[in-house]
Length: 147
Image (cartoon, rainbow, N blue to C red; front, side, top):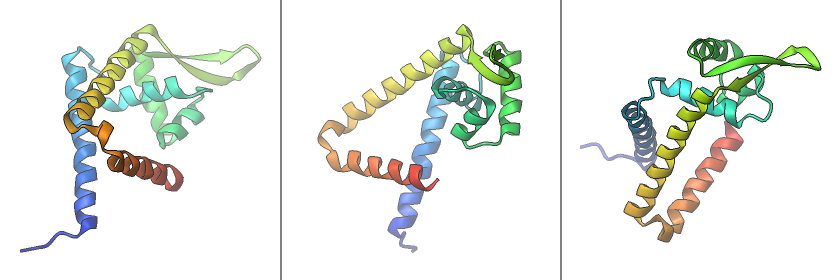
């Protein structure tokens, strides 16, 4: 019988949690009438959270190429979730803005995250578990600084 190393267990747990969250998130959005893919929702979220929503900044935030982002943005524009526009001072600079339709989807997405975190805190009594919170904070800091 194979004895799993702590590294193998941690890897399995991280992958499983990540996959479960994505799956539950997608099911929840479908149930609430959102027909976009999770990738498209995450592009909308990146547009919303980028202070200067140029293709380059949004792509960097998502850690994808501008070419990959262009494909997603073209689909989202065609579906009416965002639009391209230029600034009056520099017609060459193209920015992306969300439509009201996108803001509605992001509100549903945000509500899901709030409900998920509330359930996790309640079910796991996380307000008392400082070690887990500190570990997740350290993990987040590690990924941000190294990737």
